[in-house]
Amino acid sequence: MGRPAAAGSGFESGSRPRAWALRLLLALAAWPGPGGAARLSSVCSCCPGPVRRGSAVAGYCGSRPALVLQGRCCLSRAAPQDVQGLDLSNCSLPLLCPGFQDASTAVVIDLTENPLENVPNTSFRGFTRLQSVSLPLALECPGGDLAWDRITTHGDSRTCQGQRNPCNSSGELAWLCPENSLCTPDGPGLFQCLCSGNYHGYKCLRKGTFPMLLFYGILGAVTAALALLAWGSQRRKAKAS
Image (cartoon, rainbow, N blue to C red; front, side, top):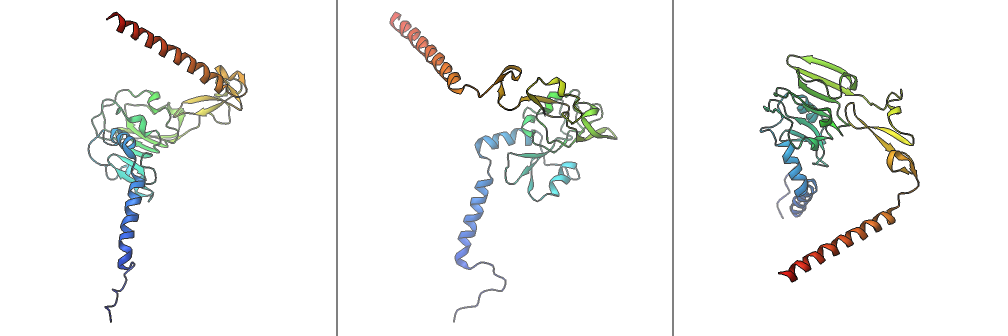
């Protein structure tokens, strides 16, 4: 008789290779690829060290099993390129990191304890999901006080919470968008006007589908003409030499 299997064994010996293969496939699926890895390193590694314990970013990430900490970022396990939280506190940053826009999907951001003197509102363009940002006390909330539901101060930091929709039902900004367009949030205190329905063009004045064939036909003809012109110029230079 053969030896009995160990109690509590969840896999037979033949299933272990399959388990390792499954883990490998999951790891490959979660890998962001060359482009994604470069993008992550620019924002998640612009400040050395991990996310600080006890920070808002650590708390947000730790309470959600679908998220994982990497460098200074809180990332989605399913989509590692999707930054959910960014902790750049105590990084001695006089300016925002060059890859800061790569964190436009962040919900929580911490920029405290940095010698930041000026952060333009446009730095947060596209941060439509941002719900909490902590800043040095010397800085105002992105978009101004009216862009947030609640603003608190503690020590030398300021926290802005609950990003408001500038295109709310009151219609305060609706008049800024031309006719046949819709106001769409584009970050704290920021918005953009998008053409509605089948309107397009300057100030959404044109109606109907965009003439793709005509556009690309003209573009192709111009490109071909420029290519022929460049080829002819190089040919004349070659003959002259």
